[in-house]
Image (cartoon, rainbow, N blue to C red; front, side, top):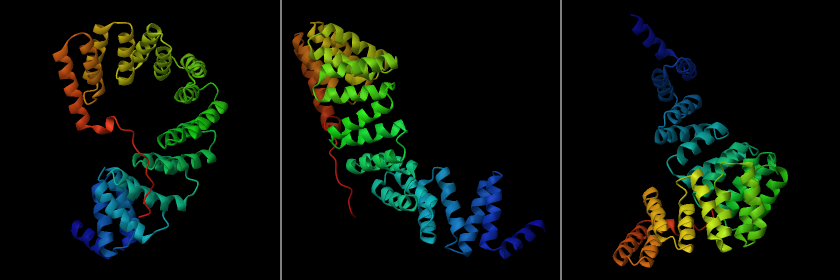
Length: 335
């Protein structure tokens, strides 16, 4: 009898009433029952925005992104001015690697809340993911103008400028960050990094040293300091710096390759080969350790082993050419 009364009540309920009851059920943890009521409301009124939105929101929370996108598209059509709908729809699309469509939806969301820094940061990352580096930089810097006290925004904008090949602009951002945060290890490192990239190695060194002083577990300043020392023909000191970098991050392939070069410069070929084998083991898909290992083995007179290592390098390079190619920027398509 109770079931019949409930069924009759549901038949008489309006979409708004069903949605309100569903919200109460969801809040109490009865999500499946809530979804059933929202679906019932949508059957009664296909453009019922609260039910469409909550079906999409629930699917996003459950990781059902394809289904979420379907509900949220309908919700956006029912209420084009709702920011949360557009934000969540973009999220569901981005998680399905539908980068361009996600960004178009987020552009709509940003037009509704033009000063939403969180969305700007998300969009900057997604623009970079699609290699739309100029747009990534523009978005990061828009967020930075709104919150110049937020240190991560400087680094987000810096990375986008670097990816776009705009190194002068990235260096200027690094200087701005250091001016505002002089005791930041990352800010000091970034200035040193850009000086290093410009070949101004002596000028870069104090910034690497300051970064090391400020953060004892920061591996990158050790690597770049070692690189300068190796360029200055001090392989023994360079070796020490590369080892410090690897103590802090054992998976740092670039540092291990550099360590092998420092050992080669000192005639420590066995040690170099050992480090390269370790790099190949830790970074299995990377052709570079095998290529350098082939050179070391050839110098050691191990011709057949050198040949085998070179063949592995060529095979990996063919399988993953992106590992050796710098991603090229591209403009965001108008449509």
